[in-house]
Image 1 (cartoon, rainbow, N blue to C red):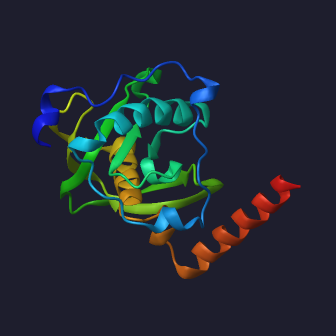
Image 2: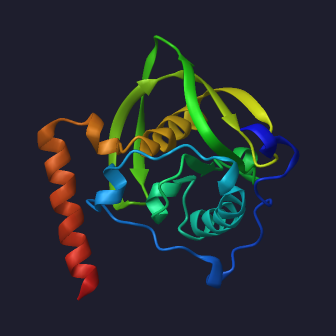
Image 3: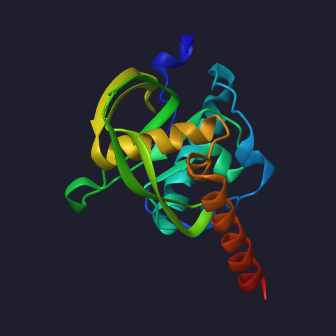
Amino acid sequence: MGTMDATPLAAPPAAPDEAALLPILIAPHPLLKARCRPVGAGDADKVRELVARMFATMYKAPGIGLAAPQVGALLRLAVVDVMPDDRKAPIVLINPEVVAESDEMVPHEEGCLSLPGQYAEVIRPAIVKVRYTDETGARREMQADGLLAACLQHEIEHLDGGLFVDHLSVLKRNIIMRRLAKDQRQKAR
């Protein structure tokens, strides 16, 4: 990240402001399948603005994670808050990568703000180690299990153009996508 280490990249999340909310792209929007580019030194201002607005959007939705491509920004950036102990614990992930994962696999029911109302059981590694840059520009590593591990994997997958339905059989994926399209048509009426 170079010179960004001394400059905070993002402000801490503030209370949701309706004007700050971002539209969430709904599958099968093509940007959701695009691979994001790494955040660079020239992106600091954009990241600062995006992080605050992404948190506001995620909390309002409500959700526990939101990746930049879900709001139309093709940057390797995600925000997460699984609210342990029912208290906010926001995490900003800039250029995150899974650097280790357990052999043990566990199922979690997953949903996605880009596939509203759709849920399915997804099997992922039980424990992951993630390396990322935080909002202050510091390089960090985090080991996670449980809901946080599933959430981190889900959001990082978005940065590579993946959706949780990609882990399902073609039949299950098609059922969910048809149901989503039907729900969206009814909502538009």
